[in-house]
Image (cartoon, rainbow, N blue to C red; front, side):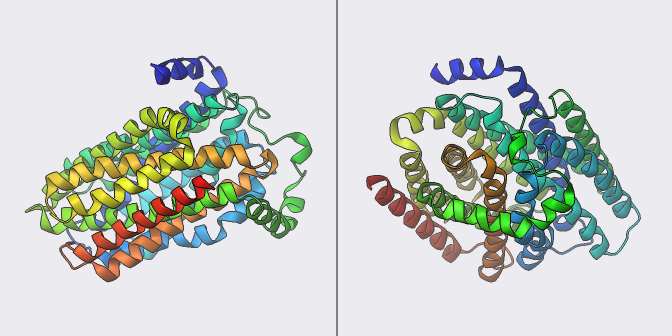
Length: 419
């Protein structure tokens, strides 16, 4: 009941509804786009995917920009965040159309990856802007916790639905990847138009924190990055929350690659069946994200953010081997739900800790750093999984290593919470 009341209060706020709508459309488009890329790279009949191929694709799409991500935060703290949402989504609309044309034209893979990389690069601006703007449309305290439960989780669900829609379209035919990317372009355009419902100055940063002109902003990038890191280093609370979230994301990424290989080669007799099973797994994990949105505000109120994060990590330490070592679809689906809940619960808590413990003028930079950690952890997990996974995806060693990492995070958070 408390969660329902809080949700009603938030949805009465016009600016929150507008920001939420922009997020849902943007992340729904992300789900469509990323699913189209996954099916093209992993499930195309002419391609023989391997853990190394999946890791390489993730690195090409995420790692180059992730290493430069903090520089975008410096710009994000100088540009109107509403304008970032508007023009970022317009640019992604154009780039998604270009990527669709490249797939239809059967160009070399490297050219396709360059185009896709540009889309994901702009995506980092938009996601960091959405997170940094959230405190500007709600009050602080418990309302911010509720907003962090609803908005990112609803965005993740929108991404899951978008991915499911893309999987469904892909099952209808083997040569529809370009059409799916055009659907993503339409959704990006709708998100850009939704941003127009908000005044340009609404989402911040405050005028006194904005440096006029792009040249001045670029000249201050290195100094701003240094200041952002110092601001974070002086605050152990958000630093430790980010460290815990990074390890949890690594664990989730390693298990994701394992499930991809199991769906592709071990659990299904055909590519279409494997794609359908992967879609079910994504949907179940998305249900876990939704459950986290409902449970986390209540859990944080009783356990504190770090206490809830410790519970999520402890559950992962127990459930990963208890369910994953069977290497069967049903236990793995249960694990997908539970670990989806734990991962999203940890993220909601981390978002709240970071937003409430850093200054507004630094939020863009801190969330850009957060985004880099998020992506580097996933790419690193893919690389480790590529070294450990056999071709069919069954690796007891990987599951045990992931469980051990969860246990370390849980112990560290309990110790920090006692302090």
